[in-house]
Length: 259
Ligand code: CA
Image 1: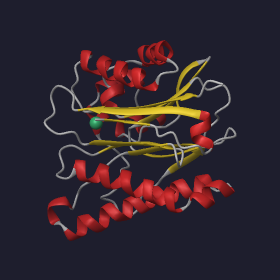
Image 2 (image 1 turned 60 degrees about the horizontal axis):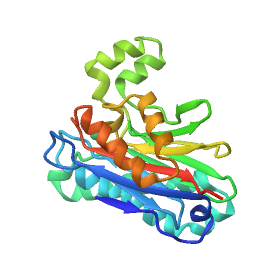
Image 3 (image 1 turned 60 degrees about the vertical axis):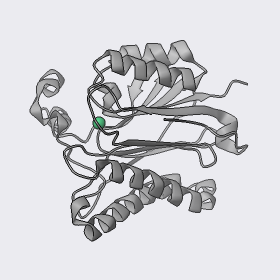
């Protein structure tokens, strides 16, 4: 499944070209990832529904639709400048919606998802909101920089100095998330401004990509296919499948529009 960026003529569409795609992978029976590329509101997001719980696919789609709906309703606030507040509010709205539906349907009571939302407007404005271990990257002349923190047990231990990154990658704690959208009463959302000047590309992706393909190869593929986001998405998914395809893989690629 893939979704081209629309040709809407507002700020985001003037400044950026974008494409998103998702693939089941080679092992999983269901695709529990969801994504959105919405140029009208400048929204690029990936949600990865938690496996091992019923309703991971339901949670990721609910999150996607809730965020898109909230941003569409608040286009005026976005234009006025309170982007961080609007994005965080949209993620909280997704959290409440997943919890409400989970309360009404015991089979979905523990459904949850990651959610990484990148917002890019015209005029160099950018912002992000993030929960979980999907990732947002920025590529520039220094290379590929991960803008989000992974909210996993293992990475919390790396940040606190308890274990090294190498130990973390071998750890069983790698897959345990410390924060998700859904399940808990409250959700803590990371919200931050995103620098757009000098960016060669942005990538929003699920761990089905980053678990299979290293950062150097991701950067190489993003550069090789610039400025064609559809070709970049296809190449990244191909690389994840060649690397084992052990998980659903979802990628959203955004390039600055050529002048
Ligand atoms: Ca995943």
